[in-house]
Image (cartoon, rainbow, N blue to C red):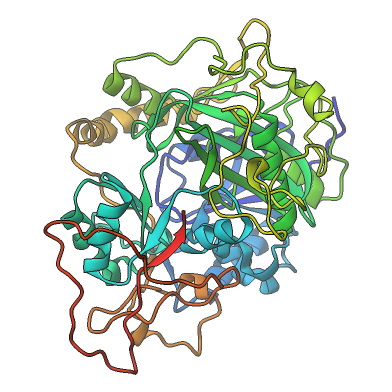
Length: 557
């Protein structure tokens, strides 16, 4: 057992309205069991999480959501929490909007809270899906082929050219207004559907992205979790695979398994190092039909299933970050791979929908049988995370690009496919394929949240689940108030551009994507593409020089 001094309190901030946020409960239990005084700030109350024996106090969040016109309201809210606690505390952002807001307001919060230092509004840059696509294209990180349409007609053409069905994403999903029916990610099966979504860009508050659909399968969805110190130095990392998801094959991890993949882990390590990332991150990957892992999402905060990566001593990414921010030693990991994480409510719905049970033991995909053990290939000790430079082909390595793609003049082409084996690396699991199962809600030492969740699930969740089983979309829930068009923005008083809308106005063509910290790819018109039937051709009417029409931006291929 390692030394742990828990005298510094911790504050968990959640601006997401989801009352079933089991990631918050995981952080609460992890720190509370170590003797830390844990407080929660939640907009819609703590929900079932508020029944935990490890929660010292629940503090009311911002009534009605975060208004980007008044960011000082969050500063006042957190200041009041700090005064009630009476001493500095470690601040954990538990959702994307919280992470982005805390990063923007960090200069005025550092006197009261200890938090990771993120350069240049990094959480907003990586959480913005358009900026993430540009970053992947610039650094040669495999990413689904992505187009940012500049018109409704362009959205229809892009959907046809990418191949139906196509994945539609809003660049800044935290701006989606509650009750609009808009979802952060939607599977669109027609060009007309893509055009209709684009026409709601102003309402959504950010740009629409269209991505090539990567078919899901039993071994396609993987994730990387990591805790990092200043400069992207790894403290604790792990890779895992989704066995079940809800919504099926497109949503949160209902059942996940800790399986070590050295190539995937090294990709996450190099990306964090190159960004200079500090704190906890959660990366989502999907393996395409060629065996290439493609980065599909970057969450600048703990993933809801982060407790999957808990070692034999109880160390996880949240505890590792707490130790680092309180200037304590972070020990090496001991054991862990083979563990299984189950989110009871989502696992039940996913099982009913698919009529299948998750595998009882970890399966090695075809092509890895007899492969050299991971520890022998990477040189890393199995008791700790891989260190930068330990594996050859990785993101950002001089002379090579993502997943071993050969670079030309130090630059790799986006979405390149590695040569050699179909699989980027072997999967290592315990010999018997078994591991400890941890439930998201149930815990023998803390049964209150599970019972509260069960009551709420039976009274409200079954109705929502029944609609999902029938294919009826659920309503959106994450939001930042004041989703105005660019023409309505005040500009002068804004402290954080991440809370500003980026959608094109309805009255004029957009002038193209705003230049961001990772922007800079030249976007030109696609050539040699066929025009899909039923999609109107671009209008030949003259365009005002003040607002020139822009071609659809092909971000990555």
